Image 1 (cartoon, rainbow, N blue to C red):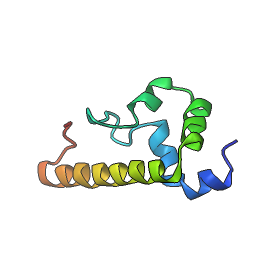
Image 2 (cartoon, rainbow, N blue to C red):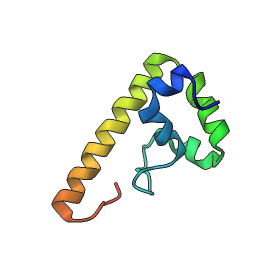
Image 3 (cartoon, rainbow, N blue to C red):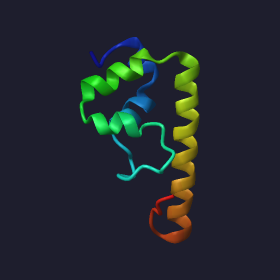
Length: 82
């Protein structure tokens, strides 16, 4: 189930669907519903059901969030929740 062409192309999002890399997602995180499932098979099924434009929107949000939270860490010395 996990080693599909789509999952390989979207490997950066697979981990984002499974859990927040900062343990606590921001309030507007589009992945929260997936985290709440706490079921990797269901989380991956949702990822596989999304269109490429939807995946690109999620990827953009995820990359921006990572960049902002890393910057917060560098400035403040810890990850602050938004």
